[in-house]
Image (tube, rainbow, N blue to C red; front, side, top):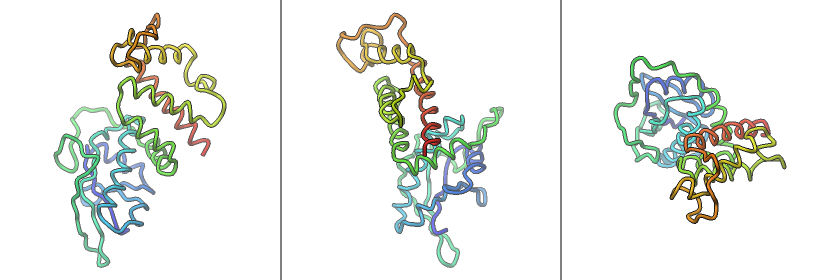
Length: 235
């Protein structure tokens, strides 16, 4: 190992990640601090390149961590560590592209009384998939653009366009036909959701039972989870 990247985040989330991220990428604890290592780091010569590679992996983990209900939104890469030939370490701090608004210690303490966080097997497996499958990584980056209606619709279109068969999401059993129709009509109708709609005119009428934003978000998250499993099984 030549490089490792120190992580910041909530202690419970870091511990759960370290229990499942046991190979490549690997998250581990040393002397009270948590680090991430990837074989990708070993191919790089400059610390700024390692920082960028670490940020890329962390963005994926933060989004996928929602699948396992992990507390990883605050996960960040704080310091790049280069391990010298004699075993000594040289630490380099770069501005992180994944930095969050909250900055405290490297292991933020969780609030007492929180429910135990589940293990992160799905996050780990899907992270490995995203690092080897550009289509999965692009979907994760797209989803990270936000929860607004236009982006939720883009996620729907992306998955629909990237199914590896002629079956659409209804035939896969992921949505019902009525859910699909309600989602599409609501997202496209300014009469239903105002300026948040994909179209600003009134050519698309509101459905008789418009879908609210929370329902649409839940539907999209379910679609993503099903598509990730499908993609993994097909890889």
